[in-house]
Image (tube, rainbow, N blue to C red; front, side, top):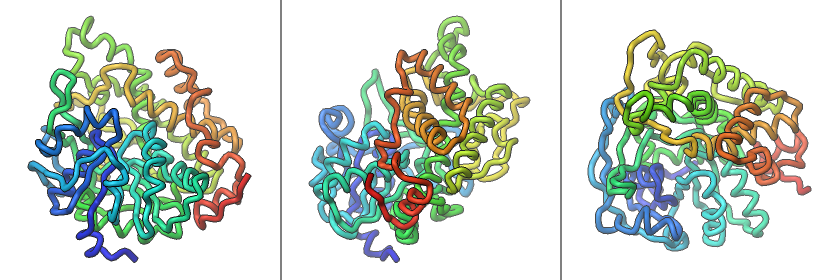
Length: 410
């Protein structure tokens, strides 16, 4: 079992200079931990170059800034190290947080693997199949370090990096803090140590003091339980006319647009719910878990996300007049709600459906339509099971790998 006191006193390395990376790093620093934050070049110049001087200020983005239990932590955080070197960041660190979009997983993992040390615990936030990819790259590199690797279905926050004129400033704004989060280790034999280690991370304090972490049933479970594809993709693709007309025909400021306020509606909820049913069918066919949601949760403004930070019963019916009070976006079809959630989340579902004989017509339609809108063929360019190292595994071999770490080479 993890030694929480020793972990809390040890350096924490945070890889990633975007919203999740900056907020996790700042939150841990405000909790009194020694924090090192890293981004790779050339992105470092945009994301972190001034942070050694300015720190990162965590502030509220009203109105929804508290968790259900009122946990708050705001202020200016400073870091022990701000660097573009993964080697510097992780040397001697006991916990490593990877807080980058899935498109950046491989560059960071390739920098990380040569510098891994026995006993380190790696949290991928959100996982987005990063655990599978990291283990695959470690095998290919001949790395046999004894590390714990796991990931989370989502981030501990809804958070945004504040910008002015397109330039990142020294603030992040919290929309909400989660009170629970679903995670899993690869393999599941490391699960207890992985989950226990969250008690040593300041960025999980609202969860630890809330309803606590939930044990997912393998890292495929955390992939299926990531709510982004099921919420974001139908909401963006089917609500695109409102978004693109928002600043013209509808005479609003495009930066006031919110997918929750202006896109979600009962008809889109029907699509989201059937999308979710296809996820359930995949999980059942493979023999892994998935986060359970009742049907009526999809048919309200906050959709399934509301339960993540306010718990069961957080509902805003469509019949009620409601304005979210802050802009969530997306402001363009070329947003991560499409450019990440389609080629990663949706396409992995499509691939698993083909492998295990599960029909996914709703998910496939989202991939096709999003591809037309963005001039991409996501069926050809999306994340594949080969990329994750599991394409050749039978069902029994896959489950043995996920649960026990026994990997059968192709």
